[in-house]
Structures are given as structure tokens and as C-alpha cells.
Image (cartoon, rainbow, N blue to C red; front, side):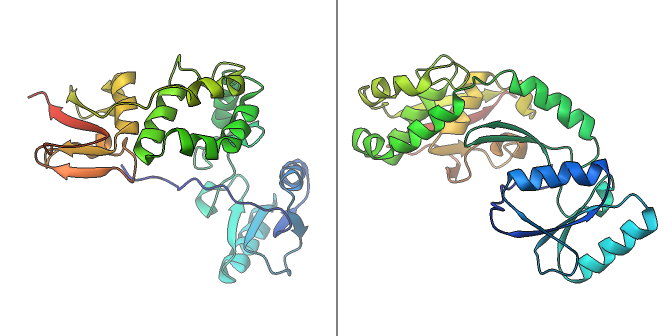
Length: 254
């Protein structure tokens, strides 16, 4: 299944964004743009993005057409079919941003999901993110190999791990992770029960997300392979005799 949209985070601080319209819808978008540090301008200004919150249908369609003709990417409030980009519901914990989008078809659903997800995150999650950023040099020194470093962090950030992001106080436990042993190289097999990634166990999904290489048959389900890292090596056939790192062999239960 192809992505409906590619989620991206755009830094708008000091950049121009066109905002057209009046009323509650326009006011809400104005507040959001101001929080992002955008320079809100009118239609005649040069900008790459525009948000159109015009209630009158004919006026809104005309504004969309004019701006798209100039190559401006447009978000048309409550008109999903006209949107080049949509604005998701956002969970914010310092530098940690989680966005929930529905392609513009149901803002209410996105908001409800945001409320559920927001309750999961401790208030100091952003502090953990900043502490991990500050510890980059020490992490590289403790785990010089990129694969080892990735696996060490993956294990620490896993459910119940030292840096489990859903548990408060993670920043204070980074030293313990740095003092730990480097993860050993290993090969694990994931026997697929179906082509549906929802049938993966949490452990299997974690293996796929952390693996340095994936060994699979030519007919391995694409939906399963999409759960692996984009930079993981993929081998069609049999596993190599020597494979340092974490190798996952996908086997299909016939």
C-alpha cells in the first residue's frame, strides 16, 4: 500500500507563509503559524506555502487556483481534495513532535488520537531527547560501531529498557547505558504467520526495526519488508556465513 502523503517537518521560523481568510478557521491557523515562528503574509507576497481558510466556496476555489498556478503548495481548510499538504494534530514534548494525520479527511479523528497518544508520554520526554543529543559523542565513544550503537540504543529505548520513552526520568539513566556492554552480533529468524504486519509480535517488530540486514525469499510480503529500516541491507536468498550485527531471516510458514 502506497503512502497517502509523506510526513515531513518543515522549519518555518522566519519564513513567509500566505494565510487567506477570516473567522475561527483562519484564526486557528494563524496561532499555529505564529507558534512555528512563520512570517504571515498576504496573497501577493512570495512564499512557498499557503493556507486558505476562506469560507465562500467560489472565492476559496479561485484563490487555490491562483496560488497553485504560481507553484505555491496549498492547504485548503476543510477541502481535502484541494490540499497539497495537510496540517496534522500535534503532540509536543520539547523537541519531540508526534503528528497524527488523516489526509485532511477527519480532523476530529486526528484530534481524538492525539488526546490518546498525548496521555502516554511523560512530560520530561523532551528532556530525554535533548540529553541523548548531548550524549552523542559519549555514545560514539562507548559504541564505535554504528550497528552496535544502533542496537544498544534500540534495546535501551525498548519497552522496559533503561531509556523506555514512556517512563519518566530516562535522561538520568543514560550513564547506565553508556556503561553497558556492546550488544553481540546475532542472527534471528522471524517465521511469518501471515502477510499482515499486525500479526508480528512486539519482539519480532523490534527485530525488524533494528536489523542491519534482512534475508528473505523473493516473495516476502512487501508490507513486512516496509517495517525494516530503509538503510538495512536486504539479501534475497540465504544468510551469509559471517554476518556481524543483527541479521533477521524472514521465513514464511507455509
